[in-house]
Length: 146
Image (cartoon, rainbow, N blue to C red; front, side, top):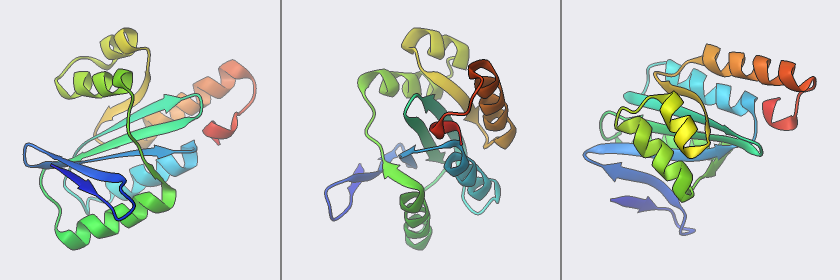
């Protein structure tokens, strides 16, 4: 089942009694805010997947169970403040599916040519380390890594 907002934008997917949220975020700081929010333990997070692209970040949050309507509304409002709902292309869809079915992040990255920064429990350190290494390799900090 798919939830559509009043503008016709997909806001959440229900699959096998769970809820999925898929968003595009402009930079690292916003991505880290999502991780901090999820780390608070207010929501039944099954896993968080973070993918870096040249123009921004994709985050997928899968819940272990349905959220109460007020939780869903609050979380959706929080996410809409930070980013926009994201509809993945086939390559990203396949990468997300591969991770969910237990394929290793390294295998998925090689197969689908996506930069998987984190998959599993929300982990701020993985994202910060990715940013440090990327910036060190470039010699400057692009806007998406700010």
